[in-house]
Amino acid sequence: MLKAEFEQRRRILASRLAPLKVDAFLVTFPGNVRYLTGYTGSNGLLLLFASGDAHFFTDPRYRIQAAAEVSCRIKVSTGPLLRDVLALIARKRVRWVGFEKSRLGFEHYEFLKSKLPVRCALQPLAGLVETQRMIKSATEIALIRRSVDVNSKAFEQSLRMIRPGRTREADLAAEIDYRMRKLGAERSAFETIVASGDRTALPHAQPTRKILGKNELLLIDMGATLEGYASDMTRVLILGRPSSRIKSIYRAVLEAQLAAIAVVRPGVTAAYVDRAARNVLKVEKLDNAFVHSTGHGLGLEIHEPPRLGKKEKTRLQEGMAITIEPGVYLRGFGGVRIEDTVVVSKTGCEILTPTSKELRQV
Ligand code: ZN
Ligand code: ZN
Image 1 (cartoon, rainbow, N blue to C red):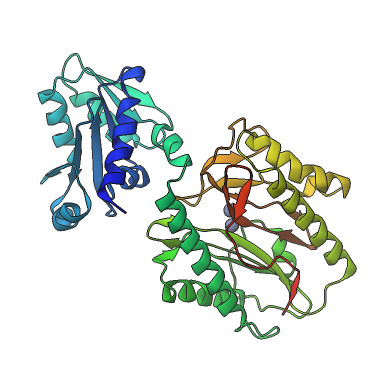
Image 2: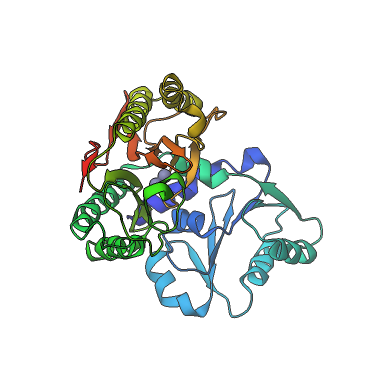
């Protein structure tokens, strides 16, 4: 990604600080630091001034890496990073320092608070960078698209190893993670979910040593992280022949997913999209078995705003990358979830996930 893109992001964020009456904003969450600087290491902070001035802090382990990645001023601290942040705050005679209230740990908060210069105060801020991150640039969408492609390729390749009656859930999950990395991903974006039989009723099942049984449902929820950007896809397959009940539940979930995708466009609320999926399942009397929201934003994090839930008033905008993933979970029977990654376009949305949504038999 070009340095100019990070500089532009910092300029936009800096311009939003003055109206909030903060002179400087301390960014501590790694995903937000990365978004604003390009830094991919684990220990780094950004202090951004309303003037646009930006200072990045890291430790000596990251001296070389930071110099290559970060285009603003870099301070390599030999002690706690926050000590040097405080020294800069004192030197610049800052009055109000904003911080990420849902991201800064209590110990760090206490340290900052106890050592602030006189006439300087902390201002808790919520979701400032996250809001900016909701709308993806063309560069970001290109990365998400690549992440989605790698994810779908890894899915196709991994299916070949399935031998009902022999393959274990955990082995298939390991194969998926391996394939992703072979195809260019840094890692999986979250712990790969492989569940079979009635375990598919667990929306966030962890793969076990259970063997994939004949004529059972198989749910795979997987995502890759590529150059920091996540993809997310869920598919449900049948290890043999589907019963008529499985077929009808699958059809209902697919209809719900297509109904939600059909209403995605700029200006509609996240709740409206959620309702579109829920209404379809209501007709089939399956809405009570749909126990999560319809989707979520994704990007540098696998789950980021907006959330496509029942009460979410956020309006969709062009450039948002979101998942659409209704699901139905029936205890003792199993579950079906179908999930694609989509990008909100000018007039609707583009489905990035290329993988077929027909109920596949393996
Ligand atoms: Zn998923
Ligand atoms: Zn998801």
